[in-house]
Length: 372
Ligand code: SF4
Image 1 (spheres, protein in one colour):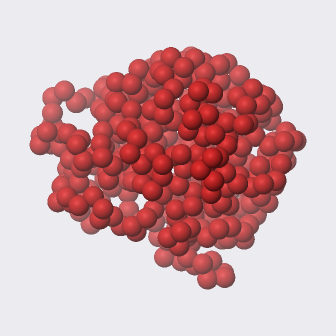
Image 2: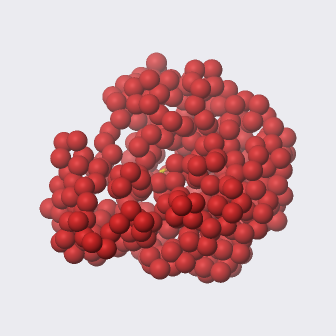
C-alpha cells in the first residue's frame, strides 16, 4: 500500500478520487457504457468502508491518475494511483429486485433505482415544467433523457412505489427511500404527488423516507408530508447566488432565495434540525466564499447544506463543463464539516436523504475527521 495513504487522511484521498474520477483499465472507448443512456456517468464504489459515487466515464476520469483493474464477479478491483496499488475497492453490483416486475408488468428497475449501496431512489414525475424550454431549463438537468431512452416511466403511481419498496427491502436490505419529482405546473410543486406516494409506501414498509421538491405555495404541505410518514425533506438550491442561478437555472431562479429561506425555516419547525436539507452543486460558478457563507446561514437555521462536486452529464447543455478541482472542494468541505460537527448536525445524526446517504459528496468523511 502507498505509505502516504492512511486511515487518518481518507477524506483527502476520497475527495481526490471523487473529483478526478477513476479510469477503468481495458476500456478505452468512453462511449461504451452499460445501458447506453442513463442519467449519470457515476458508479457507486466502496473504498475504505465508504461508498461514494465516482465518475468513470467523464473527461476528468479519462485524465485521472486513479485507475481500477477489471472488477471480479463480486465487484472487487485494485485501485491504483500512477500505477501503484493503493487498496482493494468494490463496485456495487445490481440489486436482486431489478429482476422483478410490478403487478401491472413494469420492470422494477424502471420504477426505482439502487443508489449507493443501500438506498432506493425514484423520480415520481419524470417531467418538469421547465425542462423542454432552453429559456427556463436547468442546464445540468437530464430528467428527460431516461424517458427518451425508455429506461423509466413518466409517472410512478403510488402502487408502483409501494410494490418496489417492499421487494427492495425484502431482497436487498434497502435502508431508506428517497423520492424526488420533476416540478409539475401546479402550485404545490409536486408536494401532493409526493404525499400520495409516501402514504402508499408507508403502508408496506417501515424505512426512513425523504421527499424532495421545490418549495410549495402552501407550507401546510410540510405537515401533511410529515404526517403521511416522510422523515425528512430536501429543497435544492443547486446554485447559491443570483448571478449563477440566473445563468444556469433561469426558470428555477424565479423562485427567490428569500422564498427558499422562508420555506426552509417553516420546514425545520416540522421536520426538525438537520432533517431539512439542500443540495448545492459546487463548480457551477459560485465561489468557495459564497458557498461557505450561505452554508453557514443554512446551518444556523437547522438546514443541512449537502455540497457536492458538479459532475457533467452527457446530453445536457453543461456536458462539457468541467468538474471542480480537488483543492476547490477541499477548501469548502473542510470548514463546512467543522461547522456541521459544531452544530451537532451531521450525516450520522439526520434520519434520511442524500445527506444521510452521502455518496455524492465526501462531506461525511470530512465530518468524521472533525469528530475524531
Ligand atoms: S447522495 Fe442522493 S443522489 Fe447521491 S447516490 Fe445518495 S441518494 Fe443518490
